[in-house]
Each structure stands twice: as C-alpha cells, then as structure tokens.
Image (cartoon, rainbow, N blue to C red):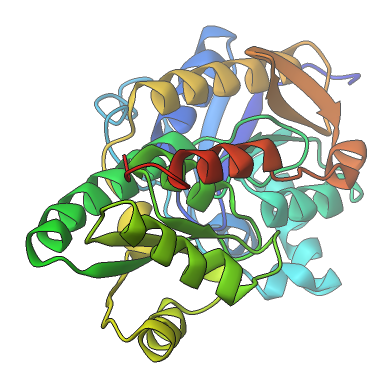
Length: 329
C-alpha cells in the first residue's frame, strides 16, 4: 500500500458470535496504538451503504470484552449484493476518509469484502461464526462458547430425561456444517449425532443405536441433530413410529449465539484483531486472518474463499466407539 493508513473502519456482519466484541476492541486499541483512527460501521455492509457509523476510541471499547453479541450490531444486506449498493458503500468510505475496512464475520462477510476490494477499498477479514465452517482457518471466533452453551443446556436436559427414562432429541445450529453438533455430541455422550456431511441411515444411525444403548442398560437416550441434517421434530416423530417411545424435542436455536464469550474466544478474538490491524499498518491487505496449529496466518482473500473445511470423520468414529457395548457417558 502506497499511502500510510490513517483511518480504518471496522464492522461485524452476518450471524453474531460470542467474541465479536473482543475482536472489535482489539482492532480499535491496536489501531490507536499505531496512530490510526477507527470508525465503527454499524449494521454491517448495510451500515456502510447507509453511512451508519460511530467514532471509536480506546475508552469507548472499554468493558466490552466480556459482552456477548456485538456493540456494532449486525445485519444481512441485499443492497450490498448489487453493484449499485457496493458503489454507495465505496462512496461512504471516501466520504469518511477510510483507508481500509476490517470485516468480522463468516464466508458471506468475506465475499462482500472481496467485492469491496475489487472496487479499490483495502480489506482484512476476521473469521467469527459459531458454525466454525470457514475453510481457511482451523478456528472461528464464537465456536467454543457456542459449544459450551449447548453442552450446558443438554446436561440439564439429561438430568430430567434420566429421571423420567425418556429420549431427548436436541437440535443445534449448523445449517451446512456439523462441527458444532459433532463436538457437542462427543462432549455430552450422545446416543447418536446427525450431521449434514453424513447421509442419514435412520435405521442404522438412530434406531439401532437406541436399541444397542437400551441393551447396555440405559433407559434414557440423547440424540443431537444439526439443523442441516434434518428437523428434530421429524426425527422425534420417526423415533416414535419406529420404536414406540415418545421423545421430547428441544430446539436450542439462537440461545447458542448469546452469552459472555469464554476464555478461548476472548483470547483468539484479541489476537486476530491485533494481527488484522498490524497487517494493514505494514501494508498487507485483501487477506483473511486465520489460525493454523495454534498460530496466526494470513491468506489472500480469493485463495481463502476457495478453501473448504471438511468434518473430521475420525471424531464421528470416536463418538460411535463410545456408545456401542458401553453405557452412555
């Protein structure tokens, strides 16, 4: 980058994730440490189109490290998908004197960032989504907190399911990816875990696992379903038809997105935000910050968006091994 970075914008886009505020805080404070002004763009790419902004200082991001959600709000923008909308966003950048944008979010956020970069606005992406499905990074901000929230809820459900000798079907988030469901399923000792990456064989994956668990002496069963693998209500109905037991269905929904971020998400978000600003200060841009083997990496945004992350099926085998011939948990 030829000119020195003097002022940057930061935004959060797509679904909110615990730790987004920690990332915003890191961006703002690292920027000020480098003599760079920071402008918060509210409501994601739509806010950039509408010139919805707030000046951020070191003090204004104090006491947000432990807060869930995002102080900058988030929204999805159909306008930004059009050339007209993106040109309005560029006009806002020029009006505000923004030399670059730090965009915090998932794949959709980064595809928007790529389009903006093609119009001459330097961008750096920071991955934050509870689905952990961004291909270019081992870890995305919010995943661990969301897992722990789901685990806590399921542990509470297990207590009552065990008391009444019932089957529970719990639907967790994960429209296109089963990372959350599989991780949580292993952690709670689920009888079965259904993920979109694995074609469902209802007899083998659900019925036989419940039967095997019952033969092992269990009287309560926990089925974890990623939303992209099917409807928990439908799975519950099919269980009743096939086995004759009446499952209790729980859809955790957006509760998984909320709450105070845990230590991992606060620390990871802080590191990513720090490296994002330093990359800009050192003349590197149009990239996504990620993690690999515990360290921070930078990848060109076009290359990063081409990468895919596959569910680690060895974990699925581990989950199976924990169930057959042994008691749950």
